[in-house]
Length: 167
Image 1: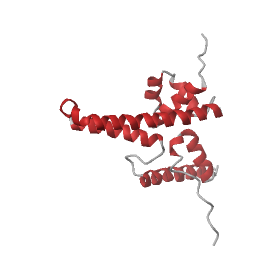
Image 2 (image 1 turned 180 degrees about the horizontal axis):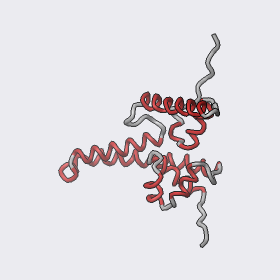
Image 3 (image 1 turned 90 degrees about the horizontal axis):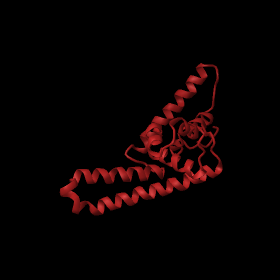
């Protein structure tokens, strides 16, 4: 059996969809028609070239724009559709589209940005503690780099801190 190969654009589009699905591999793999293990490999950096990263960024912007346009259409159509779809359904659909658009642009969504940053900093601290307890101390920068490699969407919340000033 011949192994399927994917173009950089196909990989970029799949990774953009993965970003939109907040890193949930199984539904993304099913939606884009890529085996789960293949998508997991790409997420973890296997076979990812600068060309794939550029495509991912472009596809992410396009997807964010599509979700924003969808939200605008839903809001514009809502007054005429309220009786058929119901106000709740129209507003809910628009909210999902807006949330996805903001997520893909690295903007705060329904989760408060401060809460997300605090939660992720807690994860970083626990990783550092576990590594220290295992006799393998690591720096915050190493842990953050590993988290971003596995889950690029956390980059906005875990940007490197400037070095602490000496007293």
